[in-house]
Amino acid sequence: MTDIGFDGRVAIITGAGGGLGREHALELARRGARIVVNDLGGSVGGDGGDAGPAQRVAQEINDLGGEAVADTNSVATAEGGKAVVQTALDAFGTVDIVVNNAGILRDKSFHNLTPEMIEAVIDVHLLGAFYVTQPAYLVMKEKGYGRIVSTSSNSGVLGNFGQANYGAAKMGLVGFTRVVAIEGRRNGIKANAIAPVALTRMTEDLFGAAGDALDPKLVSPLVAYLASEACEVSGEVYSAAGGIISRFFIGLTPGYYNPNLTAEDVAANWNLIRDEEGYIVPDDSSGEISKIVRTVMGGND
Ligand code: NAI
Image (cartoon, rainbow, N blue to C red; front, side, top):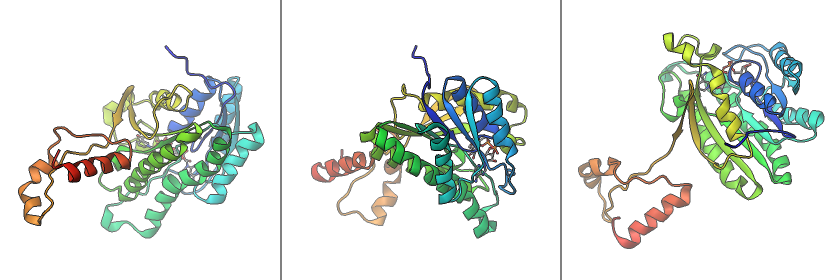
């Protein structure tokens, strides 16, 4: 079995003042990483701010013999993101790992969402990942090594009532991850996403009796693996819940081909279009383009 260790590595973990982020920070620190514990310290809805949560987790790590600094910048602005990375550079001289975990909720059914609710959620989850990862990526690119783990959600990958803003942001992180993975390949940078399910303040009313089994600690081993040198995959999405780790993937059905296609043909062949038999899982957009070229050049495959 490979040992997963982080000696000499520096990790930024956003939203690490509590919940999942705190567990990731403790897990990576326990395995030797030096940690920037970023957290704005607001409410689940993103209101307010408090230096306490980030400082407490950094202190907890230092008390356990690890090395951590607190950072209370908001990830939701470009300046904030840069400042988070600067904290890592000032304290530890480099950055090897970014775990995009900071998040808020502003749930409402779609027809009641205000622009403010849409923007606030997209700013923290999706733009926040851009703002923190981009300055860190420049450092990683220079050194030829990096690991980026972004926190998606089944609310985006699969959908969930009342979360169009959150779901869009979380699925946006999947696109972000897939493209950064492709671009980072030549510089030793791997980017993956997780879709966790865990009992935290964000989900305290959701799981009923099953909540006890959904300890956020059980998500951190996946984050540790994806953030480690041992990680071999990039551009992928993994679910983690209560000790279960699974892979989400995007499949493409063989479909139906007709060079003289009409809307009636689409309707008449709907079952074939949707038929999952023989689906492929393309690595990137060229995987689909190859399938299209094969089909139009050589007949239906
Ligand atoms: P949490 O509310 O305990 O953690 C989120 C943390 O992000 C908080 O400590 C908060 O202060 C911080 N934060 C919020 N806005 C920030 C900003 N602008 N800058 C810096 N920090 C900020 O909730 P939890 O559950 O630990 O969430 C962690 C991540 O996991 C979130 O991205 C969430 O959407 C995601 N997630 C959680 C699931 C669950 O079942 N708990 C399910 C799917 C995704």
